[in-house]
Length: 118
Image: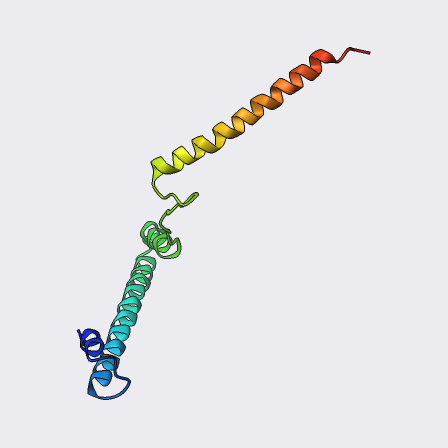
């Protein structure tokens, strides 16, 4: 809201609207940082409490959730992100490779038939 007011006013580099935008941005960054710290502390507290209770199964489960950050599997091949487009791209590529391979095999078989054993 403050950013929109500031932008609608022509993006002034000083004044009340600039200070309003600057303070809102600072509060937003602070809230994000605090939320991240609180989220991390939640795991730390859970790790400590499960360790103190000697609940090692829960401890290792929490540890794995904290340490093993799963990255989303976003695959982009030849500019395609959709599975069907990627599959079609592979099919087109390997059909070309296969035709070259068939040509090579035909040449090799011709060579073998032309060669006479010594």
